Length: 338
Image (cartoon, rainbow, N blue to C red; front, top):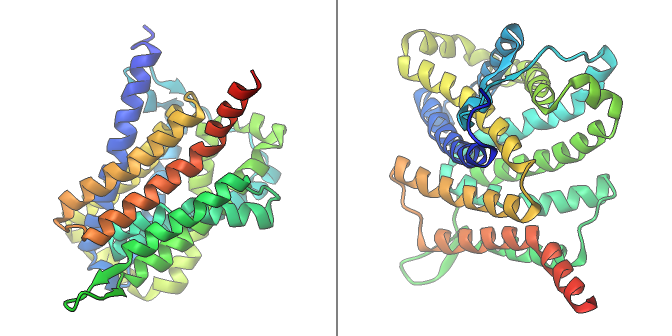
């Protein structure tokens, strides 16, 4: 029994990718609140434990040799065996895992500062990707893409404004969300570059045995990378954290579910984006950002200011244009030449 047709499965993967991302943000916020919020000194602990959940989930999949992700598309689960990676492969994977872990931890800090403004700042990821790609990986964006970057930056800047009682505007934003949101964007940009470098080695890609195994290894190595950072930054608070974890069922539930949702929605995103075209992928990513922001506004009860609404709309439209402009102009050039 093969299960649902591929087009039905694809639609369901989209639905559960979005739903998983929304629920991750909700469970992540709840887990951070359960440990005392952004001033508790336990944000890195929460981020690290989420990757710990991911690592355990990956080991369970290898133990049973089944990846259940395709069940979300009403299809039969895939087999997933332990990768045949060598020690040298794992060493080469460390830069990617470090960047992935850094992006995750910084995102948790940013969303802990302000879940809504953190999402707005995260929408500026293409700006950092363009800078990092140009300087470190010799992958400069096209001239037209560069022209879109001021739109994204302008949108985030406008979302940072607040109108005073006298009608004048001043910058007012959550510093944690801004700083760590941009740090997360930087790590994500390096992660993209390192991922391309790693997969360029066909031998490593073959020994991994698929994207699922590569993602699993990345999360496991990332977890072990964060452990010493956790010990240095929040080690003194660990006894407090484990006392809370033993007695607080809300923390237990939200920590477990945030880790599982993070793993699963990333896998479902891979399933959807690898079979859709560039335009569909760009629109899907943009729509996801909007939907998550609306959902988190409803969950947290926090209303976006008019400046944040307009600024986020400008930034997200800029991201969409950045993603599509080369394809749009390429289509026009082909039409003219024909």
